Image (cartoon, rainbow, N blue to C red; front, side, top):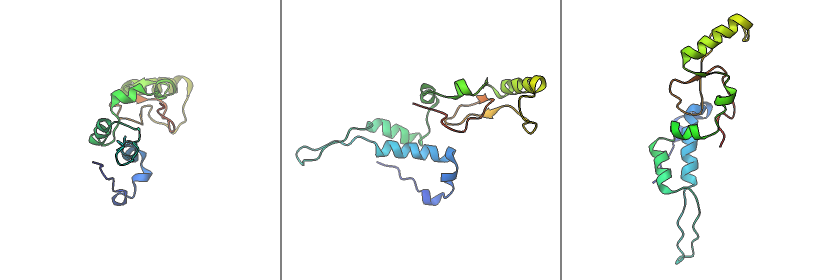
Length: 135
C-alpha cells in the first residue's frame, strides 16, 4: 500500500531539502517497486525493488538509516576537512584561526552539522553544499 505524500499541504517542502529528501526517497522506492506479471492475462512484470524493502523505507518515513548512509561514498569523510564532535571540530577551528587566520572574520564557530542523513553528534569543519553522498 502506497503512502501518499500531500505536498499541497506543505508548500515550503520544496525549499527545504532536509524535509524533501525523505519524501523523495519514499517516492523513488514506491515508484520503483517490482510488479509481478500475470502471463494468463498477458501482463508483463517489471523488475524493481522488493516489496519488503519498499515497506521498510516507507515505515522509516523515507529517512536513510545511519548504517546505510555509511555504506555510501560520503564526501564528508574526505572533503569535510575535520570530522568529530562539535567540541573537537571547534577546537581545531580555534587553533587554525589563531595560527593561520584560515577562515574569514565573520565565521565565529567551526562545527557544521552534516547533511544527507542523521549523523547524530558528528560535525565537520567544512560544510558541503552539493553531492554529499554518492553511490
